[in-house]
Every structure is written in structure tokens, then in C-alpha cells.
Image 1 (spheres, one colour):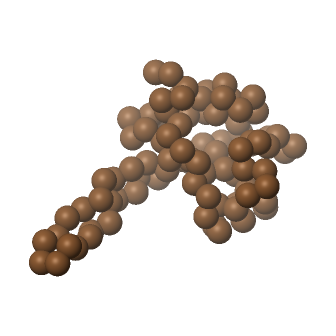
Image 2: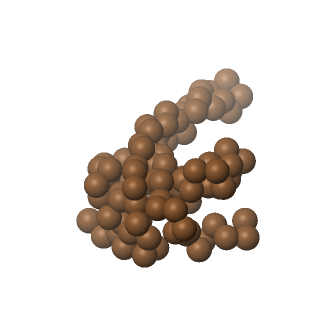
Length: 95
């Protein structure tokens, strides 16, 4: 699997920004079939950093209503990647 197919998009929220500033941990939306080892290699390859740890979470899709019809958003997978002290992901700088 290509590294750019594993990492779908970064997650920028208040909680992820605080984790980035305090623990040097970055959050990404990743492909649901990706393993922790694949995610770590993809982040190292794309951003040229050293990954210390990867934590993954399966996020259930939210229940949404359109009038009387109920549906669900797609479920997805989130990865929180902790980097070595001093390493940064340039995408997040200035956010």
C-alpha cells in the first residue's frame, strides 16, 4: 500500500492542537484497513520524522436524520501519532 493512500487527511481540532503542543502528538484520518506499523512507516516516509508511538481508534459514524428518514455517516479510523521531541509536521505549523 502506498503511504499517501494510508494517510487520508489530518485532523485539526482544539483537542488535537493541545495534544500537538503538549505531547508532540498529531492526529490523522487513516484508511480503516491500515495497521499501526503501516501508519508509522507512512508518516515517517511522507513527513521525514521519527515516530515513537501510534494509537488507533475506530470512530463510529454518527446517526443523522433528514426529516423522518434516519441514516448514518460512514465509520472511519483515527490515528494519533507521537513523534520524537524536536520533530514537527510542517503541515500543522501556523494552524
